[in-house]
Image (cartoon, rainbow, N blue to C red; front, side, top):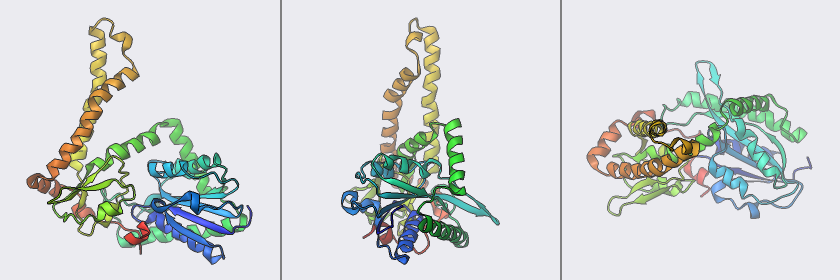
Length: 365
């Protein structure tokens, strides 16, 4: 790799884990006399940020969603400019936790390799990948880690980062590591046994997980969640009593939940259970179609995967979309909001924020 003269470090981060890794890399560059810019992906202008230079390095830190980068990160990579010879380093984060003295690692899987493959077609020169275990932050469905455990996970990730940074700046490459072998094995197993899982997870993340979020009785309509949402998925609705509305580009990064100053954002697990039941009921349409095909002459000839999917699309998806409108307006009714709020685990699961990370750090404002 040519001698580095400049680095542009992008990050996508909901609660700060990926921001920390990106800031560590920025600091590592500057400690070696390499100017580095730390830019949130939401404020990025890749065409203007990335210069034509063999000594330019682009690094990207982001969370793993179901073994892939989030859809917003994939779109960002696709709109990156062509920069022949510019080096690229991939830095995904993955959720992990300590159970007693044992660290249960996460897995970035394809998130470690897909960005490099995409940018290879744009002329970039991939120089490595390194995934880092950071504290799990899905506080919509599980309790947050204690500050002690979160600090242990973060400190371990920092030690790993320091080792890998030294290796990278000495050799100019970060491919042949046990970490990448681990991710490659996971990638092979996932693609072999569950080839559609990453794609399905992206779909679920967009059309399901964001649709269980709501503002509890604590909401004051301050709009912090809407202004700071990295996906622009939150809008405030209502003139007299504005409340957040989650649109379909929500990626469930949980910045809204974990940075709400009033702890007023939650995820309704009873509603999630209903949507799950609803999906199972819709899937039963295939069995009904199969039964009808045995009774109606000629129907068997058109029965197949795509015809069943077409029926499901015509019936299920519009109803599913309408269901969220119903959910949103039900949450605006005080008795129902109170019921959902009292059954919402966010009242006791807590909020997770990466250590020493503020909302201003994540938004770049």
